[in-house]
Each structure stands twice: as structure tokens, then as C-alpha cells.
Length: 101
Image (cartoon, helix red, strand yellow):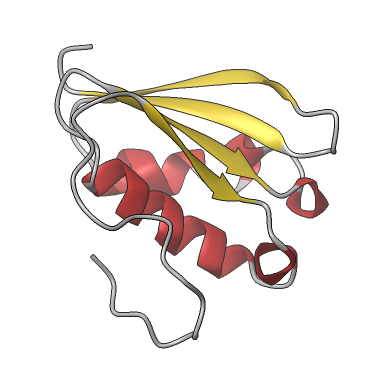
């Protein structure tokens, strides 16, 4: 996990042995695309093999495929990315399948 130097509460606390969602669409995320990327990596790292995490990213940065997907694919072997939908609030949901899921 990355070291928290931003003062922002991390989206993960421990490994998730179930599918789950990470909220990356707060005002701090709107102001900092790099924060979304780092916290998304943390969320994937904390998701156990055979499960998925839904990354809900802030809409101000556009479609996550344009800035997030390459970063995740470079950081992790064996993940599969799927665009789920755009939220009513303007955010985007990317489902990251980890391992054998």
C-alpha cells in the first residue's frame, strides 16, 4: 500500500475476501487524479484472488479507461477490467476482476 501523506482517509483498511466497492469520487478525488490512481491501486491490492472491486471514480476526470486502466494493467498481473456504467452522480464504475474470478 502507498504511504498516506495526503491526510485523506484511505479507501482500504485490510484485504477484502469478498467483492466490494471503493468510493473514489469525493471532492479530494475531483481535485487530484493521481490520488484516484494510487487509491485504485491500493483497492486492487487489497482484493483477494477470485473477487472483484468496483472502482467508483470521479466524473470530472472523464472515462477511467483514458487515465486509469493502463496504470492498473501495468501494476498487476492477472486483472481483468470491465466498464460497468456511469453513475447518476456523474462518476464512472470500473470493475476490476482479480485472479481467477
